[in-house]
Image (cartoon, rainbow, N blue to C red):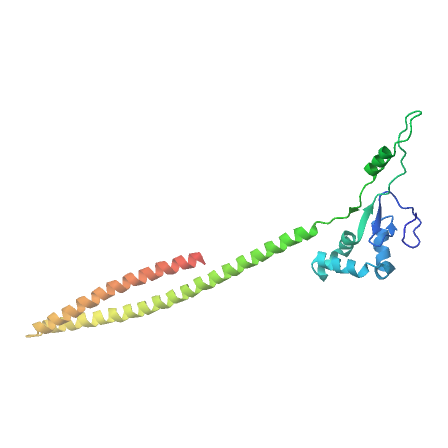
Length: 226
């Protein structure tokens, strides 16, 4: 039997390729050429084959790149033709029908579909891409949170620095005022009051220095994380 592709006169081999409709082709190239020429419209299974091709490819873009591969995967099977066999005969022995049938059944090979495993690999790649996308989004969200903390610490550090500067100016003013009071007669009570205020400011100054050091250390840690 010749190949079903027009103008191809090659005989079908054993095995050969067969479309779902039963037409045989001598090669993959002949089937693909016949499919795109007329067979896609003439084949009774044409629309079903096209639908399954699109589902297996996962979308039109993959169909465009590897259309022939998906066409072969869903439309074509390899067909092995059974050869005519004769049961061995013993001299002067009657033919055994059961033995002949068993031998013929053992030599007949089933249709072997052309398989393609790109679907599984594509699914694994898509899952990996989705996982990487989620990881990237998580990193971006964490980076945004850390950046917001750094900005807040910068503001807190700036506010504490301004308070410290005001406290230093107040300490200087009180020290100067204390010296003036100490030189004046009958102002011992005022001097004691100024000394108490000065001691309080010095404690606040020490606390603010400690706060600034802590904020700077935390800010540096966050910047290292970023």
